[in-house]
Length: 279
Image 1 (tube, one colour):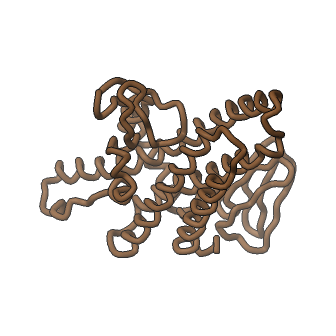
Image 2 (cartoon, helix red, strand yellow):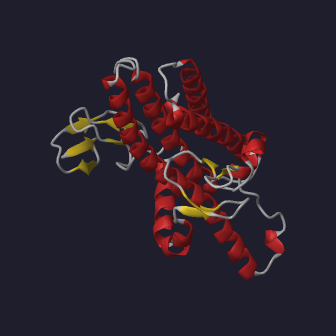
């Protein structure tokens, strides 16, 4: 079994692996077993969760389990186009959607017009607190609490599903590139940049997914405002990268590599500012 070990505790991660991982410092840092490639948080043994700390991610996962039935209705893969109202199934990881019927471009999460979305991403990813909620009835406060939770849960779950869908996209991309190579349209080396972009996309989206539990438990104030601004900036660049990866058809890598650089800078900036052990 793959475990992390210190003077005081021991945690099983992967039953099929027999490697013991030791460290003199039990800190919430990412640890990857060189044998089974399992990655986890060294302190708590769970999936790595930066920028959310160990205590917060436990609270979040417990809440998700407790409220799973309440949140089930938002886990469907289909939504109606906000313009022509035809039912659309999400079959890729990118949240920039284009209706196959009317060609309307919109955001999967908030259903807003994508053309205006570049300047409004902050409004899409952040939750707007009700300033008068303290004076409302108990029932009103309960509804507001549920509304807040569902806002963050929907985005958490959406990015989790996007990661799965983008893995399916990667599998299709491998088959498509194999056909191109067989036809003499470049070599596997020429197309390697696309696999690098897909790997970075998964890395960035994984970080983004874990920003939502962090934001959910943050106190309102200037620090949360800054965090949500950086979160929105990261999200915008991830969706731009996802859009380009899913539609790449040539070995011209310049535009995609530039987008990769921007997305990774957004990710590392957020982690350095709010999860200093990553710095």
